[in-house]
Amino acid sequence: MKKSYKFLALAFVLGGVSALTSCGDYLDKQPSNELTEDKTLGSWSMFEYFHNDTYNFLRHGANRINGSWLDAATDLAETSFATGGTRTTFNIGNYYGGGGTSEFNDTWESRYRAIRKCNRVINQMDLVPKDITKTDEQEARDRAIMRAEARTFRAYFYWEMFLRFGPLPIVTEVLDPDEDMITPYSKRPSVKEYVVDFILKELEESEPDLLSYTDAWSGNRIGRLSQPMARALASRIKLYMASPRYAAASGITWEDAADAANSFIQDFGANFGLFSEANIDPAENYANAVLRTQYTGNNNEVIFFRNDVTIGWANISQDTPVGEGGSGGNCPSQNLVDMYDMIDGSSPFKQYDATGAPVYPSGSLVPAINEESGYSDANMWENRDPRLKATVLYQGTPWGTMRDNSTIDVRPGMADNPTGNANATPTGYYMRKYIPASILSSNHSGAAYRLWTIIRYAEILMNYAEAMNEVNGPCQQVFDMLDMVRHRAGITGSVADRQDLSSKEAMRNFIHKERTVEFAFEEHRSWDVRRWNVAVEALSRPIYGVNVAMDGTVTRKKAQDRVFEDRMYLYPIPEGEVWKTGLENNPGW
Image (cartoon, rainbow, N blue to C red; front, side, top):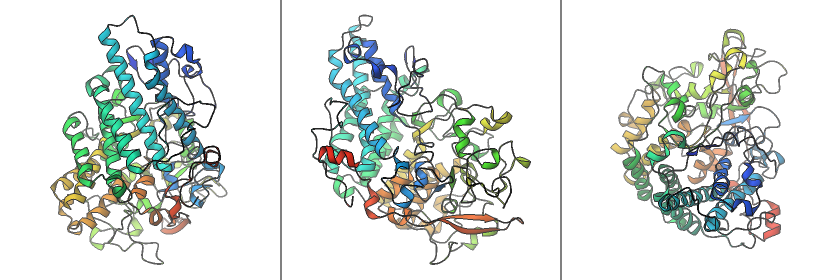
């Protein structure tokens, strides 16, 4: 495992941790990880360094899977270059392929190492000498905060493992790091034992000792684990546990999920909101919701995030159009583009399914069009939800500085679709979201922050809308939550005025679509379609794209076939772990 000392000057600031971490390998460690156990336990300051290194285990989603994004393993995108990790593994049903190692084997290894670190903090804290510079009261408070942070981190890492592998042995003691990290544990708990009785209990019991909002969002403590983060994570988990795939096993109801989201809104809603600056294009406000920081951009939307240093051209070139000198990278699909409503809030298509996608009639690449919306396939990007242009770069979009007229041009042989360039977009689209435009200025010499958002306030609102629809059907609370999210993006119509959303089922499909659009490329889609029990339908359908002719005519095409089977709801446990531990593998593997 690679070792790095580059964090030492950045990661910790007098008075608290800023959690600033490198944009490189997420397994890079602080020097504290190289200390012997005696030195780690020898003083409070060294033990604190050891604990704060846990923030480096929060991962950034950009290019994480051998150059590709997790959403490129869903119907939202296709990786353009042939060696992209999802393209050579998950998209073709090859879960053991080397290109997917960072999502598959490395997740297993890194999450259990992070859990071991948390277990050391929790179990060995009492062995660390008292800090003589602190009062007894300060000492007790600092230890309570650290223990609560370690338990919250541990819950989060176990949750990440659950999404991929299902319930796994819960290790709460410190095991030998040179072994397989879970010996002698081999019994796999039930969903309820793992998620409800352990993860949710850890979050609930730890929250009171975490930093309050006031303490965590002041000065250089922004980024520290806090009470709002624990509550927001609990909201997400309860929503998942109330969903069709898990409800029977978990015992969590939609009422529980609604209450969890509402408790966050009631207790922390005054501190958070949907990022919006006056006199700014709504699409830009939406784009900045995942780019701005609390400390440099007054972004009150982000709740839980990985905090990174500023980045430059090298960090975005892999996902930048080839006409701008990039490698194409994460190319959005027509499947995603078809999910965006019109700017007046009407639907361009007549029917949507439980995956959130419009229904494509058998043998057709075009969903049945809702003529009343004014949508036309010939001008498919006009008068659409502004989140589309904030997420997707399509033909004619102004972008960058290195091409003619500084606009996207995917016509045959043109800048972004040159003849013979293997990295040119396979879908006719390039990615806009999560790419700071300021980096492209002055011949790509600019710099910008690009944090990785784990939970933002829009999710809490969407959690409440989804749960309340399942409890009561379409109602005012559902309308209000959806309108808040959509109006921030610049949509003008109200959901309450939509006659096609009068039933619970229609509203459910609409909410599934809205979550997909709002959180595109934020690592929600892969898990949402699984918890809704529609992953086979969503992830085995072809990836669609467009061709743009020299005269500007747009035609649809099939860009890629996909493979997804029932057994792929869960990843297989790495073979080496099965051999060493005797763990029962997941069904079908």
